[in-house]
Image (cartoon, rainbow, N blue to C red; front, top):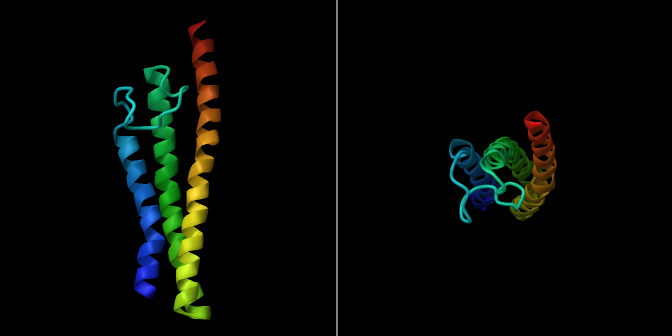
Amino acid sequence: MLLISILFAILTPFILTLGGIILCKNKECDINDIFGYRTSRSMKNRDNRVFANELCGKILFSGGIAAAVVSICAVSLAYAVSGESASFVSSVAVNLITAAAVIAVIPYVENKLKKFEKENENDQN
């Protein structure tokens, strides 16, 4: 059960880290409706798209690594203190917190993208 808890705890961070790597490596992909960071602001033009993909990719990558470390520590500590069922509950809790953090990335990236857009407008004028 401990192994399952640890695997479950690192599954979401692993997916985030992998997603971050893919976004950073493919930051210059064409604007499309399938891949990348897709909001109306990020899809306005290529510069916005590249900026948003790279920023989001970096955040997902570093956040995924941090979440994996926290997850493994939380599951191990819960197991040591309270046993197998507590380790599984802690892995679920950490995954839910990680999912909430991923959602919180969107307003952060949008705010940075808005500033980036304004800077580009000022540079063009």
